[in-house]
Image (spheres, one colour):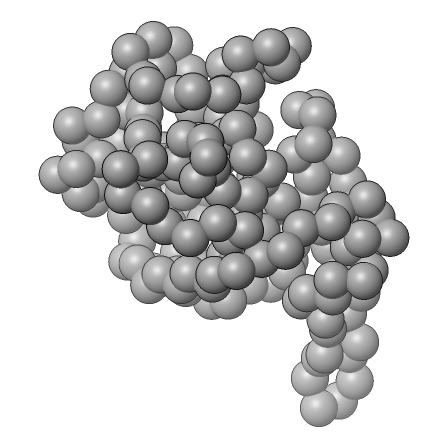
Length: 182
């Protein structure tokens, strides 16, 4: 597995080694020992999977401590623009975001440590997204930020006026008013 550090400390892209032949391909999508050798020692406790249609935008979501979640995210089918926003107040990249296109073709995974808000937009006709979490979902700890916050200036790779957004996500506060406790 190849690890690529992004410009935001601790936020990394992982690319598995892919074995291809005339039958198709094979790769390890998760190997705890190999991740530990790369400096990522996380005990994942929950897998989440979503199916979404083109134009769907989910996020930006996070859970506050002590229920903050580390995530390892990948696309099983389709393509998304995946976004992580640094909410760690003492980080030099506080308030900055990283965006990357994750697809079932490129097989890249985004490792998002605790202290980040996360969201994605669906670029393909449909997308199936799978992510591992190191903490269980805890509704009282959830928080979020408006996907269209002008101070973040996120390029979601789509027309935001046509975005399919949940009522809950449309009501999230702007970055300056979010209740992040990181």
